Image (tube, rainbow, N blue to C red):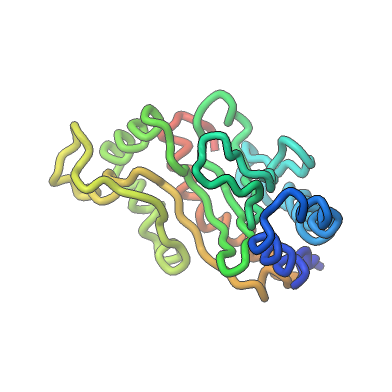
Length: 228
């Protein structure tokens, strides 16, 4: 039987963190963070290992406390105008085994009051990786349409991110997929509510979501010459 991981206390903590985003407050409530956010998320990541391996043997659900799938709650404020020290959300990425060698798409799960979602892709790919994606779509339009125009994809996912206002340099403005070629981000997902997040259905729902987005992840891997 699937487990429930998160509870209303998870969302109470994240809302309170959003209101009281300071090191002093977090230090006083760190036990609540561990109990209601971090530990259940790590348990979910551990339980994702087997189903994710069936989707792709090259992807990893890494439940380590540091350096694994779970993002740090601490914000990097060095180059940001926003100096708040903590993220009022918790996210995890399920990454390709070769991510340190080659830019690779990821599966993603995000828990935040009012904005929970799951999906995948490549967010803000570097110029070389972005050029490879665009070249691959221009040369392989049928496979891209199969991956992103299927009924399950259209019924569940929306693309996120920014697009160019004009066609990218070197690409045919009349290409049938010019709107896709203009994208700066190749990521999509589906939102879910707190009731699902706090239910035993979260894990099977996330697995089903990753299965639906897998054809696009597979395509993006091919664009980067990665195994899927």
